Image (cartoon, rainbow, N blue to C red):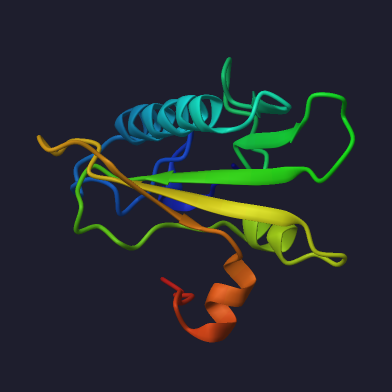
Length: 148
């Protein structure tokens, strides 16, 4: 989604690797995470649902990476942002102004963050989902951080 600063492209996170990671390395990790979640959704959603991967060909800079909708085009559209890190213990990730602005708009949109951690771990990645980001922040199960 729309990334800024150290966030890289393709779902990568500045917190995702060591301090020496290049933008290209962060982009590759992010793209890998997006592909993982795309395929996970394809495998687990009912056949009536469709998944569109916005960044499949190139980074679009949209405030989300995937859109889930009914094949007929009706029903609720779900917007999915993927945040990927190489290691399990990296629990901080960038959320751009454009991502926050989109997910917090009125009327509310269905916006989920799929957190892929451990992309470089031998045991394989872990995927967790924040289903309602605004509620998670309001209730304290997720926190906002500012970095200067």
